[in-house]
Length: 93
Image: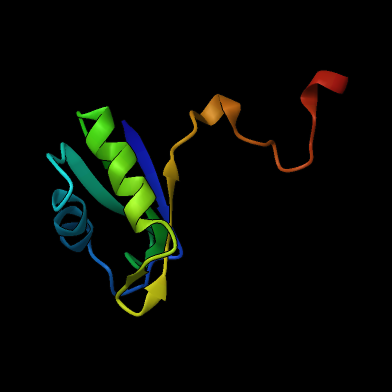
């Protein structure tokens, strides 16, 4: 299951994210998204867990918890095509 994490501290690294989620089960990948020009964290990231049950447990336990001094958001990641278009609706044209 692909998990979206937001409101991360700019100090949180991918390895930190991995370690937190590994408390709930196997983690295939964990990455904090960074700006390609500055290398600074954008404050969100993704974690991939192969066991959906462990992933659901991690989401339940970690959503609204504190990591590196910040209350984080943790939820199932939505595929790009299912996300809001930011107000611009191409289907109207």
